[in-house]
Structure formats: structure tokens, C-alpha cells
Image (cartoon, rainbow, N blue to C red; front, side, top):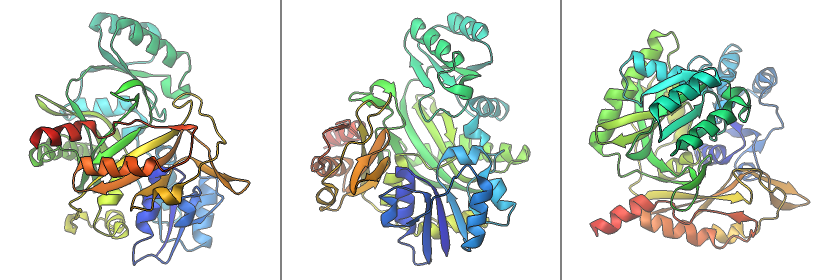
Length: 426
């Protein structure tokens, strides 16, 4: 098969790395990719927002499958436009991608199909939103309705924080994404990421993980796109997985089909595991970043076979096998992130860092004058496996500490909840 991966981040590097191992693969392309992805795929200078140009490349190069990594192109309808040209695509339609593209759409779907989630209100004007917040009080969660690169959510512990977050949304801090807001009840519990491969009819569980959204150790500071993750998530017991499928995933699949937008691709449920059971925080319609990195490290089966089954509507006849090991990834970010990151600093030592079996997935890198440099906020994903989360954590940080990049920073406590559980059970 000839495959094109769309995207340029750590998630796409992990996907390319896994697809490159498939015996089915003849040739792998990535657009636009990054220097790390370039080790596994041929990089293509394509404007992925120009769907006609992407379709032309696919036809000229006899592409058998397009794998769309990021949410932006999906919400913009790239899957529909490519399928309209007869090109096979792994990723949901524009209408199905509304599950991520509009938080309000998802909340209304939950209300209609009795999917457990936080109580909420939707607002298109500042005065109404403030009145609701003042009535409900804090703590409370403020979300920009649209795509905001993982930064449009404020968990406000005080009323002043909540009102300031509303001001930021309606003042344009998140562009068009903040033109409408969703205000949610604050949920208490432990967060988890749950993934399913979907073909429009069948949803097949595809692993669990736990992300670390806050920028600082101890889960403090502003939300980011994710500072690290590990898999599997111990809080997602077999009972919790079964309840999540029954109470959240299956009604969502039925509801989307009834709306004429059957979901095919990756359905990523961000969950809060509460005393009452799993509740949906939000949906994403693609692999998580950095959760994808740990899932790919643990996946035993050929990813390309699984993606083809999803595209061809064959998931009901498919199973997925996982390695017994845990996997953990630590994000190295550029100084200034999640605000304005400093770009251009030189990164050295990646070969030494990977010498003991760690994988270094590139997220925001470039080549400048022959040197590898930082070219984004989240720059590297240092990933390792181990018999336990604690062992994977030790190996990941040992690899990370071999990297020579003074301008980078990371959290030092990725996996802390799982490691605490392991120590308590020792």
C-alpha cells in the first residue's frame, strides 16, 4: 500500500513510525511532516488546507489510504473532499467531526441521548454567560465552543477567574472558536482518555491513557495541549470500560447515525471517572496527542490492517492485541509555552537519548543550517516502555536527561497517579 499521513506533530510521527513497520506498506508519505517523521516517510510540501492540492497529489502518486492526524483538517472537511475524489481516507466526515469542532453540539447530543456528562449552558453573548456563572458560582468550567488547540478550557476555581475567562473568550482570545462558550459544572474524580476505532456502525475499544494537561508539576498552571501521558490508565478497569462503551460510546454512535452523520475514524472520549461512574468531558475525533505516542508503543497488531478495517466497515470482525508493558511519554516544550514559545534553539543528543530503547517522537522541530532546532511549543515526546508505569517513567526520564537542550523544559511527574497506586500496592 501507498499511504499518506497528514500532519506534522508528535501524534503524526508516532502514526508514521507504526505504519512504517507494516508489511503491507509499499511507500509512506507525510505532509508536511517534520524532521523526525522524515526518518520513516518521504516528506511532501503540501498545503493541507488546500484539499484540491492534496487530492491531486494522491491521484498522481496512486495513494491507497490517507490517514488524517490533526483535528483542523477534519473539521474543515478534508475527508469528505478526498472521498469525493474516490480516495480512501481514515477520518470522520465534516458533519461527524462536529463532535470535536463544537463543544455545544456534543453537549446537546449528550442531553438528547442521555449520555452522562456535566450539567451545562451554551451562550453566544457575554452578559448571559456572566449571569449564568454568577448564579451557579465556582468552581466552574469555561470552554470556547470551537477548536482552540487544547487551550480554550479554563477550570475556574473562583468567580473572578470564571468571569475573566468569559471576557477572554468574547474579547477574541481564541478567535472564532470563542464566539460561543459552553459553561459546565465542575466534576470531581480522575480523568482518563478512552479511544475507539469506529467504522460508522461498530466501535472497537482501542486502549486507555491518562494525559497531563496542566503545564506544571502537581497539575498546576494553565492548560496545554498535553505535557505527557501514560498507558494503560489503571482507573479504566474492565468494568469501567464496559460502562463507558454502554453508557457513552454506543449511544453516541447510534445518535450520530440517526443524525445522518455516522462516525468513522477515531473517537477519543475524555472522561471523568466520578463516584457515579464515567462522565464525558469532551470528544475528540482523532488520536490524542500525546496519548497516541504511548498507544502506538503498546499496540501489538499491524496498525495499517486496523485502519483498513475501519475504512472498509470490517471492525465487527476485528480484534486488537496489546503488549503487556506500560508506556509513558514526557513532552519537552520550548521555554515560553503555553504562551509564546521561543523558537530556533539547537537540540542535541537525541541519538544517545534513544540508545536504551526509548523512542523520541518529534512534535515541533525543524532543520536550520544542518542543525535540529525547536520550531513550536511542544517539541519532543520522549517515550519508553516498562513492566510497570513506574519503570516506564524511570526509563523515559533517563532518556530525556541525555538530551542537550537547555532552552527546553518538562514536567518531572508524568504518571504520578499510576506510580502512587503501584507503590501503595507494593
